[in-house]
Image (cartoon, rainbow, N blue to C red; front, side, top):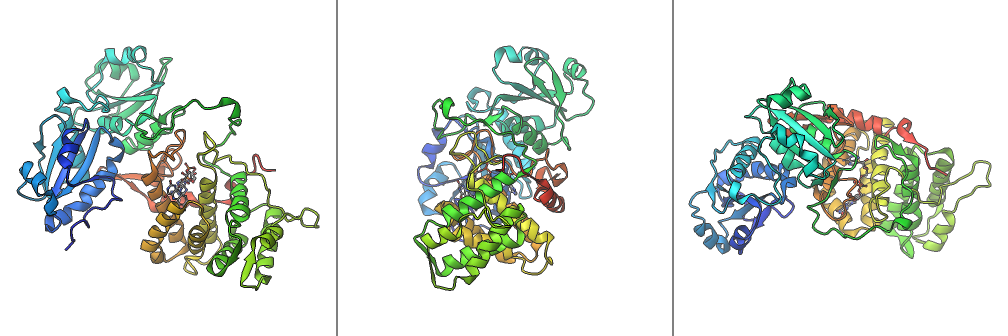
Length: 513
Ligand code: FAD
């Protein structure tokens, strides 16, 4: 049986309440959905995956809706649980108005059932509407007609649906942290609008612009996650109001470099070469000398690049000659000064060995210098390597070849210590279960998405490049599906997509030297 504190951890996107919970709950302008559980109770153990999945599903509904859990088995929480009249576990309570309601609970409730129950409860609290919650009631013809006169948003998304559908309200909540776009549901009974937009399918989505033009949302499936993904990637739509730590301040426009034109469906050689240059010559060369496991990690990184990096010929020659040089270095210690000398370009040879020394971010360019750049380039390099290893080697042989190289690189060299610790924890938990090169590709993809989910909305997120679960449906519609009302991936389709995306034919030379 699970012991206290094991049902949920700090890594779950919910508030684990303890002493002082009453103050937090009563003084908050948000709507709360709280599970009162006892960690020793079998039902609670069975229910925890559902509550955790709901927390993930609603994580972007903050601060309108906050999901929480409190362990009533913990003696320190006894008073709070008593005050809330908790006698059995688990008990779900939702507070959207100043009063608490006991939510209906059925042990087999799904994430979708619970999500709908929360919305229904939220709607019953008109008098204490959470300030950050968007309007959820159906839009009228008049409201749509005058929308842009009353609002400064660039877009209005209309989800046409039947009255018993929740999609429109879910998308409105999914988009609440985003600026420049508003979402309203329109009921199929709103005849004037249905006729004006020529709507024949429910649900279906339409995008209205300030100039009055409109178009159907081009989604693969008429479902919540597809609408949300599409709206989040619209030009000019940025995650804004919810950012807690925004470093406000006018950007110094004279220092802002000219943005480079990048297409996110492409991989850019400039990003890859910049990441290689920075990792080899700057990051890995920080220590005064390399020795032991650190030296092995460096040699292993270069050897893996030689095997799988589909570089330009001058770069491949560079990597090969560095690899040969490293293999011949048999001293236990490699001083930085000697390594730096060995890593210089050689342009004079009949086969030039050159890794450009300028750092140019294209696909990885951030809207400000402190966003994106190197970590984006490093992810891209390693995704590319896992895919090339899967394409160019027997599937079951050395499945962990590239992942181990990455793990060693990150552990010994990656400058962001906290990132390295997180990555090591993920690797420690599941990397050794990877049994083939194809699984290695998917392991890196799914764990990168885990990182994306953890960082979404944080202060390291570039507002112009919100962290999405990747690839979004407009890049790969067949990668996505909905199962029981919850988003799910088609992993085979994802693998096919990754093979094409990280293939040499999708690498573009724009902005290379
Ligand atoms: P990135 O997340 O860097 O992604 C780069 C590109 O890869 C994207 O533009 C997209 O084209 C593609 N991509 C996105 N998701 C996937 C996917 N799932 N599969 C395949 N390709 C994908 N930052 C922290 O603040 N905390 C951390 O703990 C942390 N850990 C990190 C661990 C590692 C190993 C690395 C390399 C970076 C880590 N970072 C961490 C940095 C962070 O993940 C981002 O790299 C950084 O914030 C820049 O983000 P980005 O928007 O450019 O996209």
